[in-house]
Image 1 (cartoon, one colour):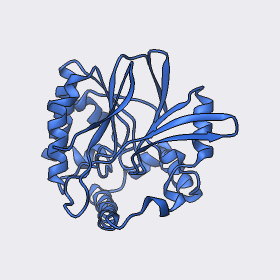
Image 2: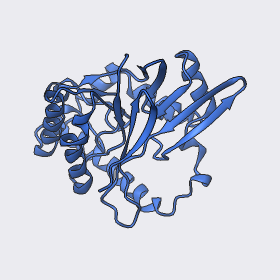
Image 3: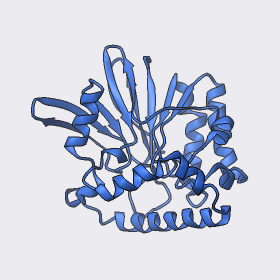
Amino acid sequence: MVIDQALIISDIHLTPAYPHTAKRFIDFCQVEARKTPCLFIIGDLFEFWVGDDAHLHSPFHKEIANEIKQVVDSGVLVYFIPGNRDFMLGSAFAKLATWQVLPDPSIIQVGSKKWVLTHGDNLCTADPAYQLFRGITRLHFLQRLFMLIPTPIRKKMGAQLRQRATIKYQLRQHFNPQKANIKGNVTLQACAEILRKNHCNQLIHGHTHLPGIHQETQGQQEWTRWVLSDWDLDHPEMHPRASALQIDHSGVSVINLIR
């Protein structure tokens, strides 16, 4: 995909329980997102998603879909790569939002440079148990079986996931990236492989909530890895976070979205 400019975001983790983060995303859709020709949302737009039928009766989720549709109606191409929390987002939501769903990973090109875009959980290969779980949950026939579970039970499962995430947020103020569990981060081997397969040396991902820029090497292979920030404006005990990456002919830059 060849483009002139794009904004890239991930890990917004939208939920009615986080109203300040949700409001900032809506404002983003109404302002910053309409100033770029392309917007890429590369996973975990929602805190959890257990099927379109379980969420699209909600005014909150309908509003988010409508805000994205308004971005598209303004002339912006909006693309979505599923994350580990919202890979069950389906065709009903896509129809409302009018966005385009891309495979993970996907390649974009600006000028002569190419970037690999991926949510990032597929790069956490030091955790084989999670990678097995990830592979199983992406099987379409198992997803169809999951959708046969009554909606209240699926929503309860999602709520339990959100509760665990809340505990993670509460502990985050004590988080030291230097002591991060390697299982929750990407590996050099996985990054090298995905870039080698796609003949690229620029990688952009989210998922880890460890924003930064990394110059990395393995053997004779060298690359630059950009990690997107998650968004969180609802936990005053922690540093607020909301940003995007902008790609244009001059390169990549971080856009601070904290107001």
